[in-house]
Image (cartoon, rainbow over all chains, first blue to last red; front, side, top):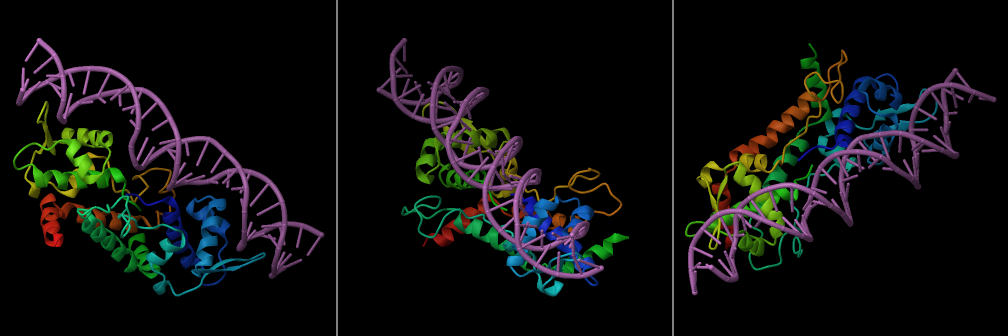
Length: 141
Length: 141
DNA sequence: CTAATCTTGACCATTTTAGTCAGGTATGTA
DNA sequence: TACATACCTGACTAAAATGGTCAAGATTAG
């Protein structure tokens, strides 16, 4: 079970963005430099974030990205969903033949994986960008 | 974030094993047939489970595998650890240059990933094979 | 006009995954 | 003793996912 760097970068970049977008739009170049993430890769990621209406873009010189919602309303769930970082612990479809089985015996660990998925998703649903900003201030020292 | 099938199979196979090992050792062939997991793959998995003293093997005709501990003492953590299914949400090492940064600014989402890792591991540490056996009875109908 | 930005899509090397295959070795039973 | 049933081990591999890079535009402030 691991997080992809795409998901990690998305969150990191948004936290960075949230800290600076009060005055001007923030360019990916700046985020790239500050967070050490490849510019080209950031572009891919922000393209998805934009499609999912998490950020807005402003083109041209002095352009960049701005949050499209209140940091309080951007949950980790939303971010991960936007960049296709999905939590997938259950392999079996409802009535699929493969993974879970179409046999008489039900998939004996199905409930477990379901529970796990809920457990993880709960964490993501309760965590907002705002929380991360606060959390970061606290530990900045 | 997804579970590998190796981890999933390991747990599934052990639940199956736990249900039948009261009388005789259980052969991988049986587990393979009942759970629809490739025999060759199961052998790889059980080799690791054995090294980690989660199961014992009995060779020869009528042989097979037996649990090496009380189902109550086999936590998901132990199983996943045995088959190298690791929970890895944090990329950055303590003082590494890559991932987390050696810069003045600390990795701004470090705490978050740490929290997430703890959250998931807690789930695994609190879940034993025994729980799964009970859970399965309840839902068998 | 031109530099700074966003925009889009193709491409690719590496690693991981999820196995398969081909041989063994040990042992209970007939 | 023969032999079938298991376990045991290591090498191999196809396919997918990952983590990017690269190239070529389109917009717009100054």
